[in-house]
Image (cartoon, rainbow, N blue to C red):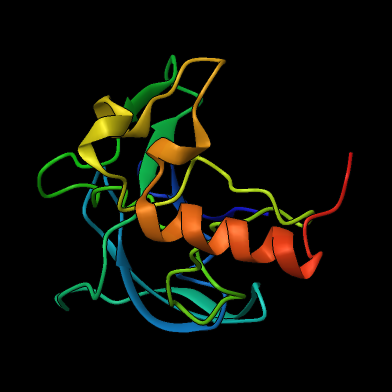
Length: 155
């Protein structure tokens, strides 16, 4: 589910990141014509708005915007003054807190958690054959303790 605001003035579709806007009330600016709209969302559904609020400052910018009726002209995330940068942080069930997962549901270490030590390469990029011991000494130790307690399940 991705929430949008379709600006009727300039035919721009402004995409809102669903995690930030799941339960949110405030003003969002159109990326093309910079019209400010008031919205109130509850559980991901538009409760009130979008209502135009001329002359008011926006609370936040959209994440991405495009013009599907104009050859798909777009504004990518992080365009200065038009869209906000993409933070790329996983969220705990819509509370806005980072959700750090170090182990899979079977108890095995996953390689996509942060922070990673420098031994893992560029941004934690392992090849297909990756060494669990390179993750981090504390994760390796925690994994060994889980194996001893029997919390690591076989495939």
